[in-house]
Image (cartoon, rainbow, N blue to C red; front, side, top):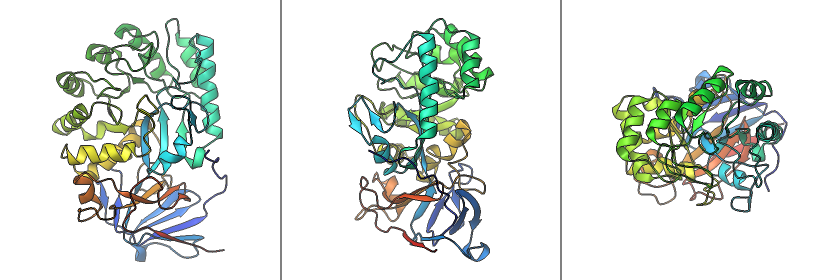
Length: 398
């Protein structure tokens, strides 16, 4: 089972000799820089090594000309408590996903808890408990934003005020509970938004017992902040309906690994054609009936690039900076003041690609050589990805 995060600070960390620096910013996805300086978990400088203060670093990482990108943000997970999922009776799934480059996860509802309470007092208590638990316990350093209640009939505005005052900032997938009509969902989504709670709506056919079809008209009427798994979780609406959602809604377009792959590509391409690629965010929608996918985010990026002709540098933004901005997180972008969450990658050994981006464009999964969260190394060469051609090295100074 994954261990809790260290409570220590990173001190000064210098990352040098970066071959490719992906920013996470879809307006400028590649930075002309080879050095990052970190102080106590935050980025304090990005640029050329000669222009950065690299003296007296506690830790120096030589990237060996590999790629550094913001840690991936999985916008759609279903955690329970700790690093365990009863959905698949599996321990260590969050730690395993960290080895796939994921440093932040966002709950779309703790729906897999056996005996999950559906009465209003119980669902509020569960959300507050989950929020507190993952705030206090970070498996392998991964930041899990949890406590996402599934709304039920009978909830009133005061319930959302209570949740917000208790620290809950998310709604689980609208439609997984008894609230399925557009007009009911719209009222509760508006109450949530009034108190600073971000909402996600289930899109497509039913995924678990108790859920049901949420069609495009309900999605549009509810107007949740995130169109959850727009490509279905697992069963998708038609491509025409999905493209209509992209066009008629201004909300986030969430594409997931555990959905319809053909429609995933159609949604991403629609966003580019509509000139709103900043709205696209990625998730896995796991754990699910199809299991836990430690490499789900990387596989989804590879799918969109190789079969959807999405430029790889943009697809990585879908999984990092786009999500950070839409979810209002302090990670996901390589810029001063942001959390020092990074994934070090290179093309997989023997990939036919000319480099990392070209290998992803050809459909290969990159090799992860290191993951850092808030300036602390959480893993070296990944145990789950194919081996990277080159990996960074670490030198620590007293």
